[in-house]
Length: 153
Image 1 (cartoon, rainbow, N blue to C red):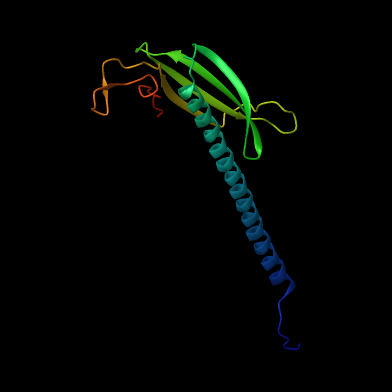
Image 2: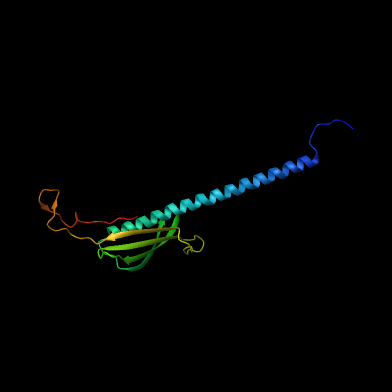
């Protein structure tokens, strides 16, 4: 027998199997990372849709009626469906608004089953302050300076 250097067939097969397992795990991890990045992207856009809708309620001249409302909008590279549930609160001048945002599936045009974002906020009824000096100079505050747009949490 000659002393030749090299790998035996068994060694090559074992090394190939180890490499295949490592690459499979690497590809699987990369796919999970891509899915998670897409989820974060969608969630961020959906939060913006919800915040924009809440601000629309907060700056509207009309006091929102209790019940549900919905609509569609475009944000980023996607179309979104939002649903707002408007509820009374213990304070008669405050309404609670829960907004759910769903991504619209590009192939069917229908909203997906699970909400991507949920935002709860509050809207206060616009009240004109009377007999309150504005800026400490004795002038009466008008309705425009007396608005309170509420807050969201």
